[in-house]
Length: 464
Ligand code: FAD
Image (cartoon, rainbow, N blue to C red; front, side, top):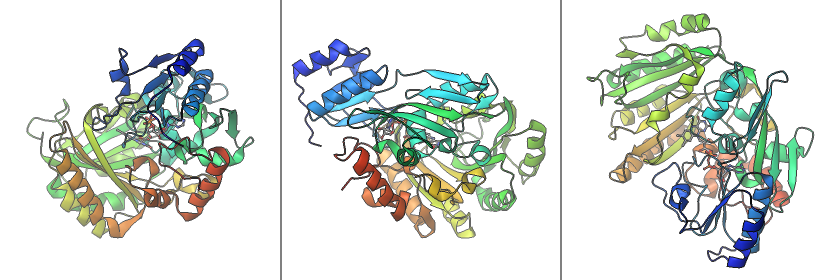
C-alpha cells in the first residue's frame, strides 16, 4: 500500500461527522501523550490518531486511511517491543478506549474488547475465582498478546492464551466484520491464533475461563549469581518431572531496589527462580519445598499470595517510558552448555534494569497438536527473553550490544522464537518463528484476507 502523510482536510471532516470516539492531529492537546507507546526508545509522529469506541469507528477510520493511502498502525495495549503500534505519518487506529469485559460465570466464558489490559481482565475474572491464561506484566494488551499466542504463569496447566480462545470478531482490510471460531471461518481462526494482526483488526475476543486461585503459592527465591551454575543445574533436574500446576521462570539480573529486597543485596548480581503453583496452596508448598531448601538463598519471597498480586510482580521492572530492547530464542533444554552461556553473560549484566527470563515451557502447551494453531513453539523446552534495558537513552547502545552478544552465544542451541518477542528482525526471522510450512499457510491466508497488505505494521506475513 502506498504511504502518504498529508491528509485531505475534507476527508477528516467527514470522519468527524460520524466518529463517536476522539480524533487527534499533531497540534491537538493530548496528541503527544497518545502517540507514545510503552517502549520509550520509540518516538514516532502519526498524522492522525483515531481513538475508537467500537466496530463502527474502526470501519470509518480504516475507510479514511484507505481512501488517503495512509500507513495504518493498530494499537491494542501499545506494548510491542519494537513499537509496531505507532507510525510516522499515517494513522494510528487506537483501540485503547475499548474496555468492555463481560464475564459469564455460569457459561465459564468472558468477552473482552480489544483495548483491555491483562490486569483489567484478571481483576474482572478473579472476582469469580476464574482466569484466562495470559502474560506476566499486567499493563500488556490482551489483543497483541493473544494474537501472538500468549505465554504466562498458568499456561502449563491451561495452555496458551489462544488455547482458551473461543472466537474473535474481526474487521478485514475491506471493512467487513466477520467472526472466526472453530465453526465459522475456521481458516482465519487458525491464523489469528499466533499469526498476529496480519489478517484484520480484532474488535472483541471470547475466551473460556478456568479456576485459578484466588490464592496461589508463588514468588521468587534468589541466590547470588556465583551460585548460578549449581542453582540452574539443580533447577533443571528438579523441574524435569514438575506437575502441570507448576510454572517457573529463571531470572538473571542485578537485585532491584524494591521494598522486599534487603539494602545490602540491591545491585548485586543474582539468579532467581520465580514460581507459580496453580492449584491448592498446600500442594504448592509441598512441591516447592525442595527449591526453597536448595543451597543458601539470599532471599525467599515465595509464599501464598493472591494470584492478582503475583500477576503484578514484574510490573515495576518494566514501567512505561524506559528504553527497551529484547532478543529472544527457544532452546530444547537447559543443557550444561546452555547454562554455561547463561552464567557467563548473566554475570556481566551492567544496567540495574536489564534482565534475562528463561521461561519453562511444556505442560498443557506442548500437548496440543502443533498443527492446530499458527503458534509454533509448542515443543520448546525453554524460551529465553534477553532484555537489554536502560532507564534513559544513555547507555542503551551498550545494553543492546550486551543482549545481542548473549543471544549470539546461544545460537548453536536456538530452536525457534516466539513471534511476540521479536524486534524488527526481518522476514527470515518471522519465517523461523512460524517454520516453513506454517509460514506458507499464513501467506495463503494473508492473500485471502489482506491481499494488499494494509495491515503491514506487525510481524508481517507478506502476501506475495
Ligand atoms: P500493541 O503494541 O498495541 O500491538 C502489538 C501488535 O499487535 C501490533 O502489530 C498491533 O498492530 C497488533 N494489534 C494490537 N491490537 C490488535 C487488534 N485488536 N487487532 C489486530 N492487531 C492488533 N507476551 C506473552 O505472551 N507473555 C508475557 O508474559 C509477555 N510479557 C511481556 C511483558 C512486557 C513488558 C512486554 C513489553 C511484552 C510482553 N509480552 C508478553 C509480549 C506481548 O505479548 C507483545 O508485546 C504484544 O504484542 C503486546 O500486545 P499489545 O496489544 O499491548 O501491543
